[in-house]
Length: 480
Image (cartoon, rainbow, N blue to C red; front, top):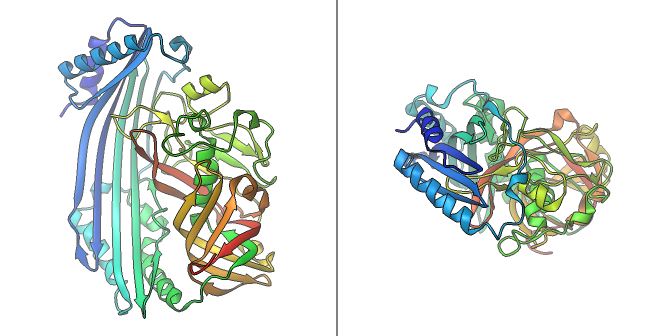
């Protein structure tokens, strides 16, 4: 198999005589293990290597190839150069105005127990053992336990001498059960696949994976007998694993600069945010502080540089409730004239980088979870997303959760099933009146964020404490 050292040598030998060119090589390895109802499912594995080259020659062009040989690289450079020349009179910006890249650097995920340090047999035995712990009650009709591993190694080279190497190792433990009795079915999962992090098998202990089966089964059975979520306006406390979706859909996607500029309009909609809002718009209450932070060690979308070579930095997107900057890489920053972040990401070697979320985190406040609950007279505590709907402006939304618990006079009381809530992004965050402290904050993730044409699915990190919102419309699955 072609090595990155060979690609680097061939790139230096084959650089065309153009003002600028680059090469981004990506090797990806994936493995997915699952035990379903005590039966080991077929192991899914994949590995590939490919290259994308870009050329500036009057205009900008790029081309990708799964043939990383010298002949394949020559063809890719020739194709990219042809596209650059054809687009010379069509580009939006002068290519010479591109954002400065980092020159040289490396980044590697922190790994204590490598994936390959355990045999396949050992990993499957762990899953068998955990799956067996979900059995024993005839009302449990579906049981799944899984482990997903992803490794991405990338190398970015350019004709200015840049060399940026990164290796990202990610682990996703998953567990879910479905309970059925007398025509009623309820599902409960281990965080809804939000426990996705960079690192190795040490993550299993960090997230208490082996303790999950008993809790998940007990909660699924509890939901079978629970009353339906009541309808009406009340205080809502969202657990961190539900805050993942709330942040993702009503802050992350609306703040993507390419979406604000109209690039996603035909596919996944535009944004209620406009360029004129940055710097003064009150996005939320003064308790709302949101950072873009690819530098967080272990979070699933951490990196040293984005896929265009911009160095990763922690930046406030929203501070004390005021919108400061968007999620846009170098190109979108130049197009819009707005401040952005190092957020140009590609899902694979055959896709160009576009504006994406990475680690988009809600910063902790100073309230414990108990204090948040104690401050509610009539409300509900919601955990783990199970359904979502949002309009094409990323504004009006309706989300459903797996687990709800009423709050009455400052105490958690009745478990309720099929809880849903709705709101409008432009006002919802202003109803934020309590933010959990650092001890209540969890580092979680969205496993598959889709965007772009052709579609690109990437991993996105979201760390958040529980948060409390006032005057939110909630309703059960049988009404609303």
